[in-house]
Image (cartoon, rainbow, N blue to C red; front, side):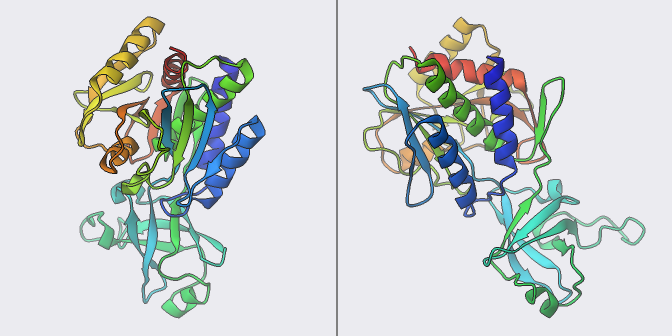
Length: 339
């Protein structure tokens, strides 16, 4: 087990090191394709950029889906003072990014560093605190620019991608701290599951495929799946917070979110396996959440659906989880695809 957990940790560091806000995911998709090919699988890249791979089994097809697109921003305009006005990609929370380092990616492949700040960040200057909302935020380039023309001369223009630094850390006590644990942590778990299936020649109870989507944060990542799909489980972050049972050291099983209830039988089966395996778990309701599999349902697919994931605290912030939650999620999924 420990070798798979170590592998998942290394894959998390690799995935979070690749900037991939929604709409800017070619590099992370290429990484997934190569990683799965190196394991001996035959992944496919869809037109929209999703990565799909069947890892074994026959009949009653099940898809496990995680997303590798993240929150981020885009250059809305270049200001007269040479700084960048941003626009949000996904449910980005600007108060959590104030003071964060970032990179700006131009369409001709140049990369610049910068910092996200509100437009009056100096405590010794501001007459009152600035509300940290999008129109008050700007990107300061780490370049000697002070005019719009100087910034444009760098090749930066509206539509360029702004990616926040992930700052990924796994502590000796097992805590995982990073931006974009939603959902690169679960994507890493699925890579660990694929590695386990290959190395242990696991006998699967059904045809099992993995789907890595690239537009989940903007609502349509899972809108297309294989036509033969009978069941799909989103493997995404589990919520941790007020009046929820899940902690960072558990696997969360979602019974309902903003899109309504998940399939009762699927949810019950997942909970029963978690109980049998003795892993820490909680069944919870997420009030402000949507998943890839709900996009699949809205697209008209007739499937059973579920949602599980390791507990993640401070979602859409600098997030935190724990390797115990990773282990619980891994064990649950491994047993589910064998029963």
